[in-house]
Image (cartoon, rainbow, N blue to C red):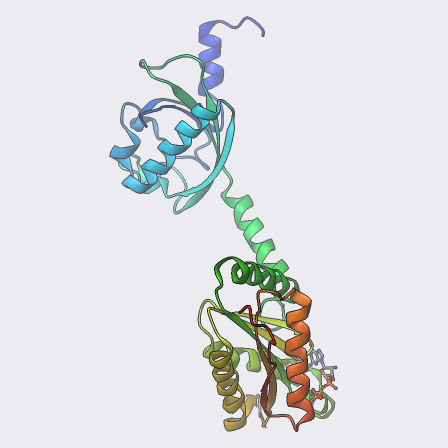
Length: 309
Ligand SMILES: Nc1nc2c(ncn2[C@@H]2O[C@H](COP(=O)(O)OP(=O)(O)OP(=O)(O)O)[C@@H](O)[C@H]2O)c(=O)[nH]1
């Protein structure tokens, strides 16, 4: 490395745009370097000499302290991501940097020398709030059906895989309901595609009202929806499906000046430990087929023939 004077090294380090901390294994702030980009960072120099436990809630301080010791024990650079409302850290002027909860990436580098007589890490910080928000937005888009706001087919298939995994490992029940609007084509043909779209949206809004927060609702085709109900046995899922069916039978859908009386058919099945995603979907498809072929506006279940439930 080039031979810099101590003054030059100090200048270089103090002008680094991203901040770096020297943090002791006991959670003490030993030094604060750089972080001159005030649009992205608060002035946290007042933290030096204090402990993580003095300036933030105990749980949060413990998490940081654990990462410090993990990096020291592993002896290699560790990358972590975390949310922090820096303005709420005791001793930091909340006016000195950006507002609200920020997302940071930290590179935790174990240091060789002792600082204040203890092992320590160099904690390099980068504000990645903008990138993180964009990533979250893209993730949501990749999981969502744009028309209805329900999850899309890909998300549903992944969730089903997870539920089957849980089913096998923890024997937790879960059921699926396949809902299909009856005679939807004539609605499109008579009122046009835009009204058809409005009906799809309204159907989803109504279905959503019947579901719990942990239930997953997905649009898997034109007018076909799957509801994945964790911790739910077949009998309870039948009740949910019947409630949805009755709801549409009882009250027409209002789309602009049109009041449309629609009905839905549904198939219901419970996930079995021996199921694959496709066997579960095949079974619920058969149940829906029974509901359609026996006259529509009804709910049918598909027996599982599985004694390992
Ligand atoms: N408006 C609108 N229509 C769609 C969309 N996706 C699929 N469709 C229509 O949904 C209709 C599905 O028709 P079919 O499969 O014959 O079903 P159906 O008329 O509901 O008859 P059954 O299901 O047998 O009761 C077709 O007219 C498709 O064009 C969409 O995103 N928007």
